[in-house]
Image (tube, rainbow over all chains, first blue to last red; front, side, top):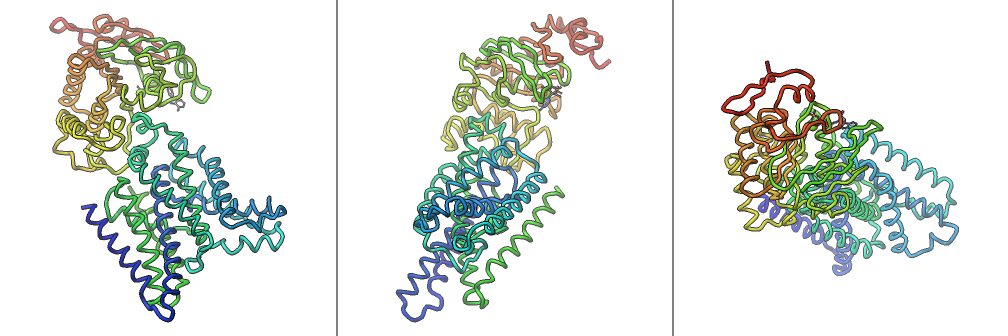
Length: 313
Length: 252
Ligand SMILES: Nc1ncnc2c1ncn2[C@@H]1O[C@H](COP(=O)(O)OP(=O)(O)OP(=O)(O)O)[C@@H](O)[C@H]1O
Ligand SMILES: [Mg+2]
């Protein structure tokens, strides 16, 4: 049954991709196709990265309502980016190759995420505390981000300012090559860890009893999540509720939390929503810039629903 | 053999266990009894390396629990905790299958499947195998957790109050199964029990703890006497003899 549903999701993804590439082709076809293919690569990468990082993050925290972005990981990424510019701006950092800068930002995010989140994950916090901590993290790092922005000289600031909010229309294609390598590597690791993730979802004591070395495994998974968050945030900017929406939908579609099923289902759902949605908005509903708003709107509703339904249980 | 040497434990600056030394030989059923808060669960968590060791040493079959790779230990010792909650939405068969994880890392072989079906059958779960855990009754869930621990196929089984929520039929059934794996397969079972008569009837040895110390230790016939039990539990209870076996009338 779950297999059939994944097949349906895969078919929908293919449909979205084909529609995205072919609808309304005009003019210099080869040129337009190439542009669209690049954008498709970026969009699907963002969808998959957010979906997979959210699944893993929820499994590690034992909490279906948090996502990396709700816990402020994307704010942390932007803060790290700004901090690098601030600290190294005088040394000609802004002029460095963007791919190299991106690599540095990924490393900074991994280090910051481990330093801040590992103590929290060691003892699983209950949901209320976790959400609160996430809100505090998010606000704190967004404020620090703008504080640094104010301290930085205007030229350096222009380098990072463009990427501070989600825009599915303006994708950072210059980072695409490096991001693709990172995403593919992360996805391979995530897929190989699917059985371990199943055990991790049982909680630290049971997982330890079954031979998982908890702290090492959780650190590794957090590094994995960080790299995927870095990819999506670098390419389109921060998104708040997209991951939550995608994973909640995928889990309801396949009706299981087993990662061998849920990981591909979530990844495909991410592609369908992002690529399919972009196609729809570009050609059907006029303005394509509203996709981000609509996704966040439905994601926000999903968040509230999960909160209300979860607390009633 | 489980060897516990001079183990002490403090949590949040409160001493919980005081200099415990205990050797549990290979094979047989050892019951751990004692009042609430005596430290039984804490000791079991230390043996099962769920709680990091602070002072002293614990080894199982010569392997120190704090330095041996976790994967190796998971093939030797299985633990059922007192307050196991199943965080994930799982079906009974999926939960029980996790017991095989230390051996197969998630890829079920035919041997694994046979063992899983055996465990399901042994604990009368075959009809419930497709149900979600959160739809089960408390006793059914407890049986599923015990089945998972059995499935792990380890030489050592640490069970913290496995009779919780079980009715008389399944409680007796579980104790008989434990006796059977101890006698037939040479397994070592350490079980925390509050039902002193269950301990007397099925254990080879009873270890009594109180206030973080082992205060009495011996065969059931030596332990089930009014003075020893008064020492441990703090009130005098009659001990009758039926068919030559001591029966504690602790409820009167
Ligand atoms: N995390 C903790 N922090 C502080 N004290 C703790 C903690 N866990 C247990 N304790 C204390 O340690 C003592 C021993 O607890 P433990 O759970 O080992 O008792 P037990 O013998 O298993 O009792 P019961 O029969 O009620 O299960 C208790 O006094 C308890 O309050
Ligand atoms: Mg206990």
